[in-house]
Figure 1 (cartoon, rainbow, N blue to C red):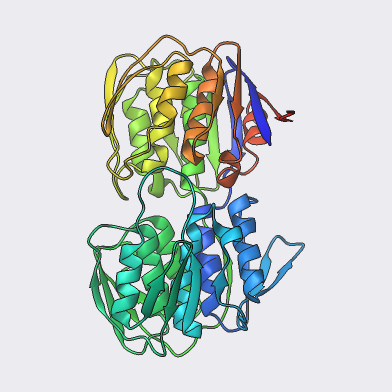
Figure 2 (cartoon, rainbow, N blue to C red):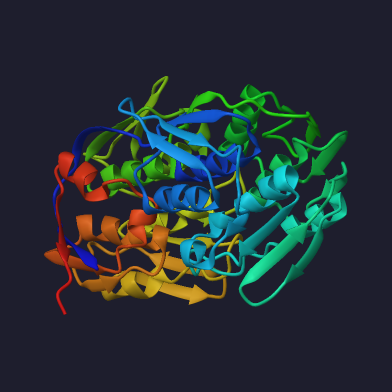
Length: 421
């Protein structure tokens, strides 16, 4: 176990490169199950979830090699054990993404019930309903879901609620089905588009990714290709908020600004100077008076739930009062109690948080409850007076590559130390 110790009060200045997106890399790694031959995937972030996914593929029989140029070679064309073992995936919800590819390619799958951050109910009913409609026979027990199908059939499926992983799972399953599958009310996230683009580069015929309806015309086989994963828009947003909250001037490179347009607009509305280039965004808050702004989370292109906690921290030191309404997950305000320990003025009412800005936060000993809550506490530590100690940082290591190194490069003072009992 490790913890972060943060000395607050430094203004952040400089520029950093954004890492590859975990939420794009994980489904792309799962999709290699569908392919014939070796896939070469680059720009994968060095994160525990990525490592776990590679271990999972290897445990099923995939061959994995690491190359000096940074690309990882994955050959999943001879899976011998189509099983996602409990001990490997109990903490990672993205394990569920191997379900569709395994059933489509090998006709069966044994999948651990998904884990991950405890941020609320994230049912996989949509995944199962779609696969069952395709012809899969599904049974389950307390730990595993079992699927079998001699053949899968094309379907016309309407998601009752927008689901990123549901869209990805059924889209992957449909790529090898003879006929045309139509998925309706799909997730529009850039990571869904990235997966479709990658599969199309391998020979899939997917149309409409990024829109409500996606059409997949099945092909007999898919050939592996070489691909660099897109940048992590949530990481980029987090570092831009770090610049804003410390009255600093921070530039984040290697990003696609259009995918974080709602974040840059919100920062601008809050009084932060924002400059957008072709592949970078920079914020200048050196003379800014941060103004509180309401936030309403919703699926892309709306305000992302994965940035709610970070903007709550920013609002906690802003001028005025605002309301943050969380509509995606019902248990995603666990960071509130920890921010209040640091002096934040926040009142909860079900899925709404009312925040009245204070002049400053104060360092405290706090614990991270989930991935994005961890990031919000790091941001609070950057601006808080004195020292902040953050425990349970294994959450943050699931989604941020070398967070203390990147922030220290910008002028923060953060150390990582082992917890001694």
